[in-house]
Each structure stands twice: as C-alpha cells, then as structure tokens.
Image: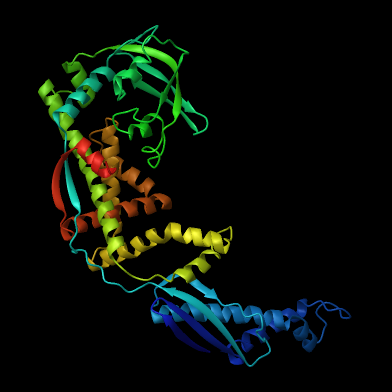
Length: 441
C-alpha cells in the first residue's frame, strides 16, 4: 500500500491511499472459505454451492468490507506515525465511479490540521487587574441586611414605608414570571415606591422596567431576565402582592454573632464589620480573577492570528452528532464555536509554553479545597481528612465531574501564568465601580 500526504495549504491536506490486491486478498480468501459452509445459493443445498459461485455471489461485498478494514487501520497508523495534529477527523472523498475490480484502488481523505502559530503572552496590552475593596457603604448595607434577615417579620395589612413586599413580577409577552421579595427603597425613583403604599395582598402594581432600579443589572435578580436584555428592556410588568411584612430588626449582640460565625469569633460591631469586609473582599477577589481571565482570553483571541481549516470543519460538522446538519446549519454552528476553538488552541499553546501539566494529584488537591470551602459554608469548619478524601473519591469517580473540575484546574493554572506574563495594570476600585467596569457602564 502506498500512502502519501498532499498539501493544499498550511492547515488543509489530503491523504491519498493506493490499495493493491496483495493488501487484502489473503483476508478476502479466508472470509470466502468461512462463508462456504453457510452460503445459501438458489439451486444448491446450504453449504454445497461451488466456491466460484460463492465467490461470485458474496465476493464483492466481502472485498469491500476487508478493504475498508485495511484502509481504516492504515489511515490510523499513518496519522500516528506522521505525528499529525488534526482538527476533527478525516473525511473520505466520495468516489461514485470507483472500479472495485481495478488492480489499484485509490482512496482520498481530507484532513484539517492544527495551525502552527506564535503566542506572545507578554504582548503589550491595556488589561486591568482589579483589586476590589469593600467600602463603608457596602459594609453598613450588609450589617443592615443581617439585622433584617435575622429580625422578626411582622405581617401587615397594607404596604407602608419600610415594609417588605413578597410577590410575583409577570409579563406574558416577555416570558417574565418571577417571585421575589422587594424592599421599597430598592427602586431608583421614589415615585415608583409610592405606587405600593397603601396596597393590600392581591393588589397588582404595574411598573416599567426602564430605570426601575439604580443598576439595570438588578433586573437579572428581580425579574430573571438575561444580561443581554437588561439595558434595552422597557416594558410594563405587573407585580402581584402576595404578602406584606415589616421587620423588627435583630439586635447586634453576642447571640447573633455566634449564630453567624461560631462561638467567640466575632464579639463586637467592629469585629462584625471587619469580618464582613474580609469575606466580601475574598469573594470580590474571585470575581476579579474571573474578569482578568476573561479579559486576557479576549485579548489573546483578538491578537493571536492564525488560520483555521474553516471549510473542512464546516463539512466535518455535517457528519458528526446524532442529528446530521445541513450545510447552512453547519455554517451557523461553526460561527458559534469558532471563538471557543481558537481559545482552546491558544490555551493548549499557553500550557505547553509554560510547561504546565495537570496531574491527578493537582485534581485531587483542587477538589479537596473546593469541598472544604463548601463544607465551611454549611457550618462544617473542621472536617477530618478522612471525611474530605471520602467525598473526593466519590466525586472523582464521576467522569463528568472529572472533566468539569479539570477545566477549573486548567483555568486556575492559566490565571497564574496570565497574572505573571501579561503584566496587567493594577487598579483599586469599589464593588460598584467593578460592576460598572465588568458590564460596560
């Protein structure tokens, strides 16, 4: 068998395979012999037909099956021996005129290659690494929320200032239907809050989403609309009142502190504010890291230029999956996934350039830390190593979880590389400023 690569361009090639009689005749003969005792041909008892008739009747189908086996195995070995890095899998060129009786059978396969490109992690950029601080306004607001959350709810007949109103926002045309709890001071315009004053359970208050809250992104929390809609949404929504409560604020005492943080951890209002600041800034740091990772990712995708075998991949997309795609559907799918594919290649290059490898020990350690953090959130602050490792073992026995956690480990390692190599500018901001920077406002 002769196999060769024919280059089309840097990322597209054709593999041409020429199969001769010697490559498959032994296996075809063996299959014919195996078929003879089982062959059923008109005019002969089962297994009694002459060999030439069996060969004439079954030989072509057997030959096609055996040639396919030979070609598939040779193609796989050739790709391995050549060290080819492929995108997608080889696509056979259809030859409707193939003469199966010819001395030589020629098969061609289109392949798409992983592009060779240079990745400059230290390229000049305007990326910002945010240091998010919890200011007094945020801390005082959180203290007030704690007092309200652990305070005593007192049912009311009508809505008055300071009440919390439970109800459902709805707009059938926009598919909005979300139950929530409102404090009247959440609205941007005091006129909106006044619409609720004096209302009772069962009453409906209609408001418009445009400028409803100080920050449009609050629509995501209160109405469960998507981020893409928050800035343009300007529709009337009905709020059906289901319950009304005023709150007797909880006293800031040791009993409350112990309930929140464990015995003796916090002993004063000053300690409480310090703890709130510490916990908030820890969460903000995670959010800031995610933004940094996203910003570096976008920068690298936009500034790392390489060609992809786009037309090959569109054809390949039509052949994979349970539901075969039309050419038009494949075009749409390629456009949707191209950016992700580019970053996948960039990610691989970044890991290779930085000599980063993900080991099973990395995965176990990451999973163990994640489990301890989750347990701490539910009040289990000192689990034993045995307890944690037992949970780790169960989690890592699930392949979907292994994939999900492996992606997180890779992201964490890449983040450290990006922090070092990309050399972003550090900027200290409040949480409100960070949200504005994150969402383009």
